[in-house]
Image (cartoon, rainbow, N blue to C red):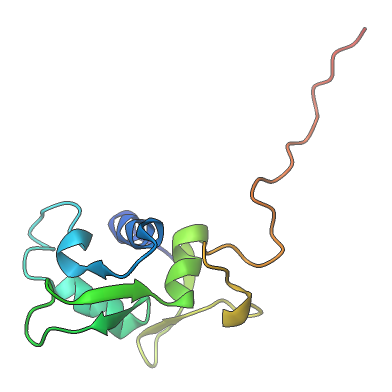
Length: 124
């Protein structure tokens, strides 16, 4: 089932991507809300396969460091991922391989900017 990435989750994934290094859990709490005060969202991101723990501090998700998985990089670039309801994990959409997802989240061979159609031409 194809799922759109929620806005708050997308912002956390983009922050981790732009950091270019493993980030602390405390850095991923971009907006202090009641949903992010206990750090369960970090555990949820790891369990669903969007992020992985690099250095885990037992019992303290704020002190642990995390990095994006290929699924997380794809989700922060394209805003969607495939969700397996049986295992409750995220995966790449059908036809996309992990090795084709680049460091920026873009698929290999995809241009940075898509060409703009020239529908309006000046008449002279």
